[in-house]
Length: 282
Image 1 (cartoon, rainbow, N blue to C red):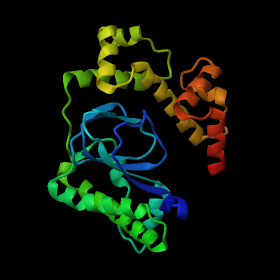
Image 2 (image 1 turned 45 degrees about the horizontal axis):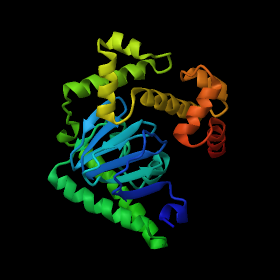
Image 3 (image 1 turned 90 degrees about the vertical axis):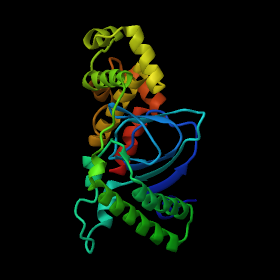
Image 4 (image 1 turned 60 degrees about the vertical axis):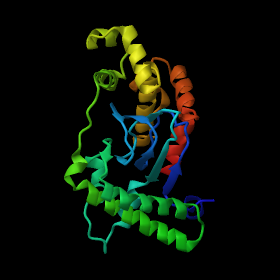
């Protein structure tokens, strides 16, 4: 049992060395992702990044993300998920820091390559949080909350440094894949075909299919369906009373049965079950 389970904490802190990453996914929680070692191409929203050890990513919920990992190297990272409302509640007076979550809103979805001095401060803090997270006593609970507050303050400090605004170069191939993803982002609610993409992006459709799979590890239509399902989850969260059929059409599915089957494939639950879960949490 972890602190999250023992005290119903809306925070989890993990150190993961799994070589098999999760599928394309999103979640309502905010996320702190810190890349420690390995070889990883990270798809984040409509962008693609080649990560290097020491890269920090801040995500503020419901952003599709997926790490394509080279299995020849051990993939090590720290991940902290937390409820934004809980974090804001922690930083009420006597704390005087304003905008503790501003870095997640202004620097979201862009890796920050940390300088050596900031890595030396961040890594022991993340290690300590992961260690405390596995305990179940009250003292560890309080130390964990203290460490989590310190983590958010450190991120706030780092985000104010000039190097945090670093921009990542992309190769010509990555630029073409980003164009495909941006096209899907603009048209995912429509009836998209490979011919449409090839025509509008001035690319050969067979080249597109091969390039997307090589770069991302998934097919273009896998991404399209995942993007539609992600939008459906957002709509259910915004309005749980919305009918499943209405949301299916709104996100680009022509048939409710196809939507239900695809939703369960990518989330593990039916859209009706997901909607009921959202309703019970409101």
